[in-house]
Length: 488
Image 1: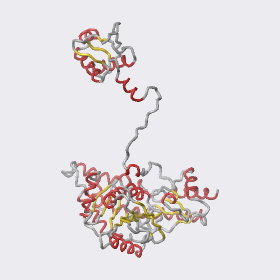
Image 2: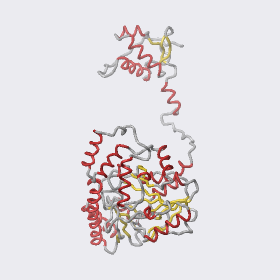
Image 3: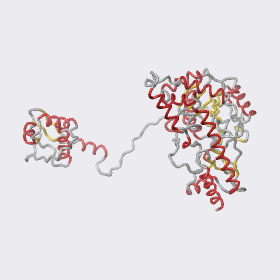
Image 4: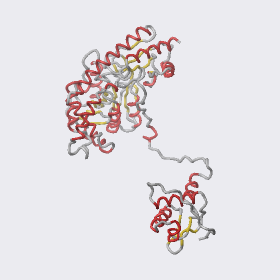
């Protein structure tokens, strides 16, 4: 080992009150090495000499030296002396990243799975002010959070014995019972709690369903226009997507186009995004097709809870006699989006496959929130909240309809709506929805052109308008801004 000559001098800074002596000495020595004042190969005095010179315990010196040795700044052993390493760890790190300060980093060539190459990012809700006309959101500012917090506090004070351990992948048993009771009573679903699987929401329900029933190359039918998250998830699984047109009766059951399909995704209660309700004639035709072709139907019970003209339409699953329907819903838009709790009602012969997949992915939904939601439902708070929000959303829908009639009559037409948190506004043939969307965003108005929901070209221009999460005053402001945009 080459030795550098010269006296060893180390200026120690003041020791911080919360810093151990060995750590203080370590930082000082490492700084001297990195700054070049202690050059590679320099021999350091013995631990005994340093202890005497700087009035530190020998143990402090030893601990600092050992830490520097373990990181590669010093080397040596008892009897041979301690030296600054010839090659410092920082030099090695710089060499691995390139020689220059701004040397370009080489992008590694990764092998990606077919799934990773197919999957696309699905955006989440943005934390922004509730401006007109944000869609697919409830009025979160009106959620009874105090009641929810009280239930959560009560459960936290006296949790069930196994709450900190977890639960079965299928979900918290009392919540599954409560969900089954609700669906049988209010949605016309025919199921037992044994068929209910608690998930994070409809998006996870679609993903698990794809894993259960689809192989790469299988055909899957989706509504067009329709919910992009469904098509993206099914496509990522390797399915071949078959877009199916939607009219005033819902999805068109075209047996030739649907030939060979293993799965059909539908939103029969309140079609996303057009808002139409699938007629009984179409429902029966779809069920007959599925039974005859041994195919499955994924029923997304989208926006079914909020109906303004009549009692909620019974679920497609309730008409099923062959076990062809996988029924899914979510509490995230009924209560608040960050809750991340929903459910699947699976045919009895498939539930074990759904549970098995859940067990190797997210294990189970967050148990504490499941318990709070269960109390919220069984305590009657859920039903009261739904009744209250139906009234508020109906009022906001009336404000929207009246404002459009007053400011945009003959220019914009609101599609007839019976349910949901948003509606569709049809535009003149010479005004593309994408243009209106761009101009509206510039004025602080959030709306989405219907083109974003469709794979095939649309024969009408339109935009989606949300009203549930928007105050009446903001709805009126939004309509006034739209009137200016469409007049320009």
